[in-house]
Image 1 (tube, helix red, strand yellow):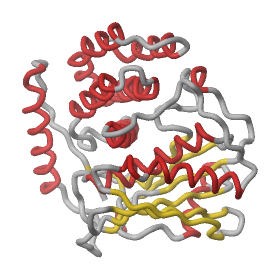
Image 2 (image 1 turned 90 degrees about the vertical axis):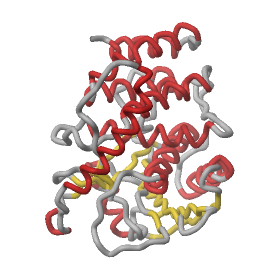
Image 3 (image 1 turned 45 degrees about the vertical axis):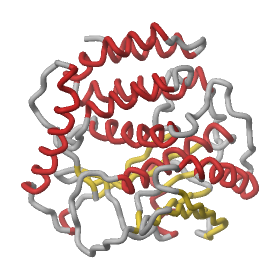
Image 4 (image 1 turned 90 degrees about the horizontal axis):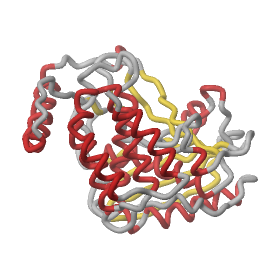
Length: 342
């Protein structure tokens, strides 16, 4: 289970940003120790559903750039948020998000995104979330039961053909991704995949796992494999793990913007914005990372509008010096104008 917090005092000097980010985290740790624990019976748990890629909502103008899904396309649901770690506990614990927890949420988001772009299927990602105060992500030490995963995937009126359950084993490095596919109609396990990877180098295993997953889905369903749009590509090499991290952080910012979540859910807001900006600088011709930045700034504006001004000039400079081509250029210009408007 993961809870997050932030610091209330802010200054606009950019050279203070590193120190402020450090103290944001330290204050978050103190707040965790001061917040009363909730018993399991007091927790109100829900499944947050992310339709499509986390940075490309169904109603987004970005669909003009990347294309739409046909109505009635088969839906594949993705569910993660489980990690086996060396130190097990049978009690509910509150903690700041760590690397295994972030990866457990980033992987389903990325797998869903890849299936969306590489196949005719539609996708949704399910994220277990505590709605009672203080709100936070749920991180379990055991994988989901097949029948529970299917039941959750059928909530919300969208019927999933398949459920992909991602489980991480992080007892030692290298880590292991275990992926199993459940057919919704009869709860049968119809496929299993597994990959080992060094925790700092997911690029060595995750892209290959994607290809195997896409192939398996196409065999099991009526889903067709398709070419990715020319406008879409994923950062490679060392930048790949940062892309995964930024997906998870956008998820956190989107949930932080929900009514009632409260100011103590998110921490490291400056790091989130700066990290997204740096990823765009390092991958200056990548359309997906620019959309990810725009969506993150838009979501952060609803949570911490006071921070947007600190990054406004840097974002404007990036877009002026490294403009993308149409059709992405015009859509992104509208998004950034909305995000940066005072």
